[in-house]
Amino acid sequence: MRLRECHNFHDFRLLAQKRLPGPIFNYIDGAADDEVTLRRNTSSFESCDLVPNVLRGVSEIDMSVTVMGQKLATPFYCSPTALQRLFHHQGENAVAAAASSLGTMFGVSSLGTVSLEEIRKKYPGPQVYQFYFHKDRGLNRAMMQRAKDAGVNVMMLTVDSITGGNRERDLRTGFSIPFKLNLAGVTQFAIKPAWALNYLTHEKFRLPQLDEHVDMSGGAMSIGKYFTEMLDPSMNWNDVAEMVKHWNGQFCLKGIMSVEDAKRAVDIGCTGIVLSNHGGRQLDGSRSAFDQLAEIADAVGDRIDVMMDGGIQRGTHVLKALSLGAKAVGLGRFYLYPLAAAGQAGVERALRHLRTEVERDMKLMGCTSVSELSRANLRFR
Image (cartoon, rainbow, N blue to C red; front, side, top):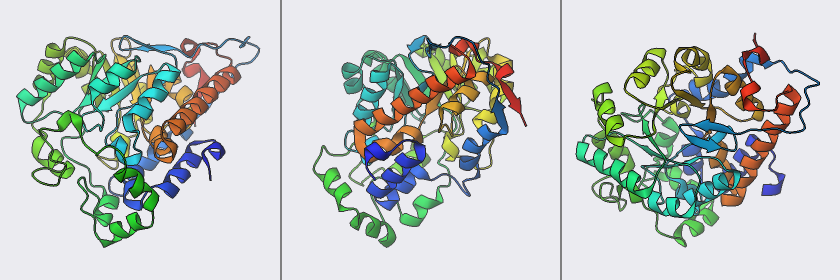
């Protein structure tokens, strides 16, 4: 299979699987425990049907949305994800370039493999910085100031990862960063030498946002230890309220799943929330974001920008989320598979396919702008 033969999510996933060593593919592909929530994230969209209108004059389609003060040309954006240069040497540069070419938002993670300053200088599009809450409050403040100095538009705090999820696929291969693979994992790398050659002949893998705190040589700190030793499970609403005040700008909480928490986010001055279960990678058996979307949008949608991620594979999924009240939807695995498969060319192809699907589906729904999508277009079974 070649890139030009990829026409949907499943094609890109298959090509990524062919090119990546098993442990790395399973890191992207896997989730927590029995992966029930991972599967539910996509199947939840099948619980309702679209009801189109016709004869509406749909020669001109406006897909643009405004979220957290950022104008996006498409109602989807690239959520921040970790370790991108592990999947392809272009990493965050590929994703940022592809997102910018479509006029949409992208994000850099605390566990990103390219510095947020480098990305901000190269790409003018709306940029999110995703970070975790550390036991070291001084580190939290320093990371926020660094993002502000770099010109980041939106601060995004992940609130569902105070400890790592039980990702058993990684346990079976011994996958970790730095690499400490078991025999099964080493064998998987050995049969994909092209990946190893690519990895070894490009810039050394590093975590620029955390260079001073995570030792990538395998010494004092690893990614696993980072989650268990540096992140603060005592984080509470007062801590976050202080951060929102300190940032004094667009501030988003990623990982909100209850109405009560959505209301608290409004109360402390957040300008956005992302309904998310971390792609099913944290608490298995938790609700899908799509299943929670309607009640949270009803509760706070007029006071804060509500977004969601998890399970998006089609343009119709995007339209269903927008119809229920989401201002925009985030993509994760949707662009990680094409990144792994073909770098920037893969991400651009995947995002352009999705944009084409959304435009086509809006025409078939009889909607000329995102604002015309509503629950009148949906029927739940």
